View 1 (cartoon, rainbow, N blue to C red):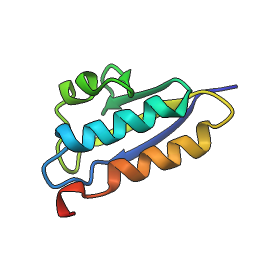
View 2 (view 1 turned 30 degrees about the vertical axis):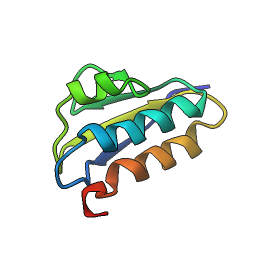
View 3 (view 1 turned 90 degrees about the vertical axis):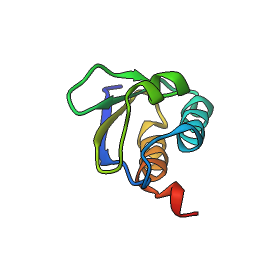
Length: 91
C-alpha cells in the first residue's frame, strides 16, 4: 500500500507542548500502523514518540505533514489531523 499523507496546521495556542503531544503520540501508537510527522520539509519523526514530537518545536500555525501506511491509514490520518488542528489550550 502506498504512503498516504496529510498536511495540516497546528491549532493549539501554545503549540504542541507536553499535553497535546502526549495525546497525539498515544493515538499514533494505538493506531498499530507506522505514522510519521514532519515540520515543513524537515526530517520526519516517529509520531508515536512524544520526545520526537516535542523536539520538532511545533508552534501554533506551523504546517506539519503526517504520513501513514496500512489498511487503516486514511481513517487514522483523519483522526490524527483532528488532534493536531484542535486548540487543546482552549479546553
